[in-house]
Length: 280
Image (cartoon, rainbow, N blue to C red; front, side):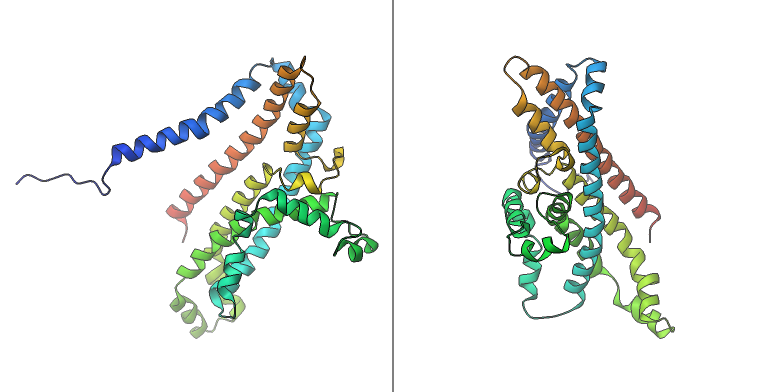
């Protein structure tokens, strides 16, 4: 009897062709052009551009603030995801919808709102600035807006895992005499670590390229200039005579950010594969 080879989904050729076209036109070509533009520089010029003291200061602030924001998001995201999954309370659906607001709200609007809130005469700044807490035009403000933009990644990564946890396992741990803390630490937490790391990596990678919100809350000084702002500054400060050189230097700095983002995504995928093979 002849067997018919049926594909799970029809239209594989059309789907694959559309996928490759999208990735090529909207992703690969722009990214390739960035590296191509940076390659116009000689190695000495490239190194001078990416190792410029202003660029190095921007890297330190970008990666440092992104890392700190990612860590804070992991802590807050775990608490919020736990609350949304494990408890019932009024307006729960509204709270759940608010988690996705950073995805829908233009980040420039978020930066403007944060800047106005934490200014010395702002609603929060008038109380915090006298205490020495400056949220606007400072590194603290940059971390705050990066927390805002990356917050949903951790919640939406951890939430499905919490929903799929087997309640019987927790009940069995309680029957065997485990306390609530022991149950959380030995039964629940091991399952939450992989999605929490994935959420952190996504939030960290997202924060590296953030510009819209930071430009409003930054003081536009070397101490508060992140790498994307340095890229824009190179373009704005250039003249017609040296525009090509400035564009290549900006592309060189952008290539550093792209390589770090690629590295983070590769690590995420490798970790997920390792967890599926050897994790619980």
